[in-house]
Image (cartoon, rainbow, N blue to C red; front, side, top):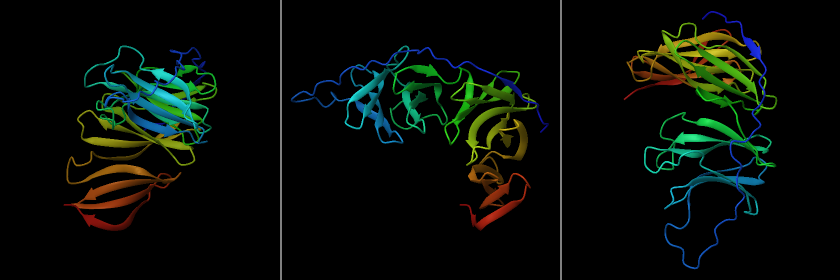
Length: 291
């Protein structure tokens, strides 16, 4: 892959909330509540400092969806209702808790395809990523519409996201505090490959990998981005898992220089460590025959 010169631009963070959460009181408990009176908890996440817990609710009867943030005493702090026209049948998107900021000052939320209110139905689906400030209740959009994939860095300071058109794909690295952003082209020739995402930051956030796929859905590419230099390098090209006898799949990081792949060769599955600096591959453990 050719080295692409990055472009850098400054963005002004969106500070106008799209909706003000209503800190309404919780419904009073009735003496004999019906079986469907209580909302269904789709998911919950406690903040890293243990002071707050966010709950995503589905309200039977009204079909309403909300996220509620409560303190550790159970007092309601903020309530975020579903934004826009509320869906009343499946398939539907649900308002979903994405993650807390590392310092517990923000909660990130988005809209996922989880029609039954449980597990996400479409992998990596998370649109309209927003954040709420726990002190002020201000809501702002984190990245613009049209992204195909995003991932917040391990230290919580940056977000990487891919944005594609019919002509090009761009990877963005945005500082979540300042809104400053740097970009570079993600694909040399979008006629052959498209960016499908699966962004994964290295343990120390010095780099990341993302994945592209050919338009025949046969081959994948793992591409490494040096975040400081905004330079790309093709690390590995391989068949889509289970598409043929020989295939591979990315399976995470060992350290900032080493990727893990699961590979199948001659009906034998093995775990391989790939050094992104030297391109050296090491088979880990005993290869296992596939069934």
